[in-house]
Image 1 (tube, rainbow, N blue to C red):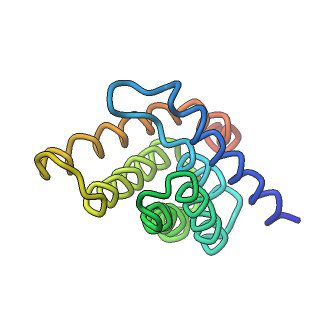
Image 2 (image 1 turned 135 degrees about the horizontal axis):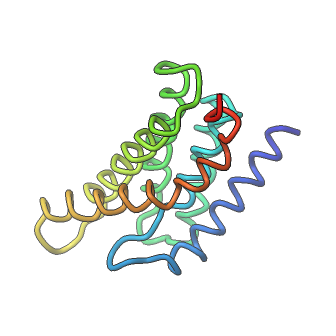
Image 3 (image 1 turned 180 degrees about the vertical axis):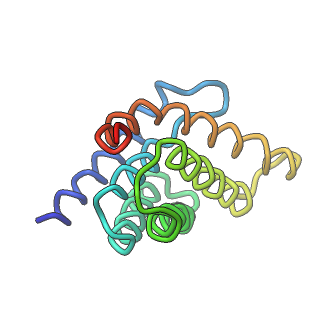
Length: 157
């Protein structure tokens, strides 16, 4: 039952990523709502579950953008691995600043993977730095109210 609830949360995250993220686009960057959903799931789910859900969600995102099938699975599973392992190995209690840093680094890694694996015209180094940094910063800022709401009890302690 717990896994089914997490799966529904991921489906909602994928739907919001496909529909709502474009409304918040600034220039070339938009918040990664699906990665935020994975981070919020990391509050309650074990890392193995987060990896499975990231692969399922990445595959769903690939279905709706079939140009480069499989890249979203690789990128989001890698990001989920970073999120899940940081929750286990680096700290035992939730801290807002640490959650934001983990989300920033995970988003940065996800979009560097996209920049490396998706062939595109233009200067490679600009693509490698410009969009991943913008996406990571914007996703982190966008997620702050959600992280505060999700971990409100832990931050008050």
